[in-house]
Length: 196
Image (cartoon, rainbow, N blue to C red; front, top):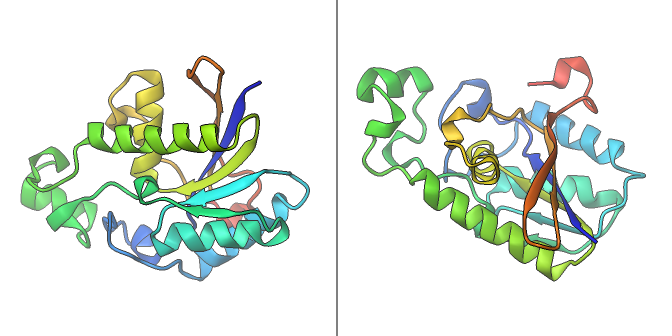
């Protein structure tokens, strides 16, 4: 049998709304993000899963804890599920980064995409091994999820469409260790006004 990883991006933060680079900066959800997490929790009330995992950053950990309220499953905190480290540009808007550096690739202390993909895939492989033949809900971050999809499809993560807050990407890990993307960036569980 195969493992299913239900990969969610965390709820919205003020920095998401302002298009500021968050990276490893520990930003909380805003009220919209809290409401998105609550809608997600309620949408998954009857949808069983066997374990929950998230990044240690509060925007992901809070989203995971909220979704888990109806299930009470063990919540694994794994720093490998954290957002890409953006170094000196954390807190800057995308426009400010482009004006100052020209592109993200010109930033010296940014975490390499390859590193993000390797640590994310290792974390997902470990979760699949720890919970065989199970459904595991994982809450992570936009660039981290793009790195996973880039690794699975063999394409540069920057070519992967950005994920939306509280959007679902469903993955299956087969017995041979290969990964399959079943769905991507689905936020239809949220009312229109909460889709971001």
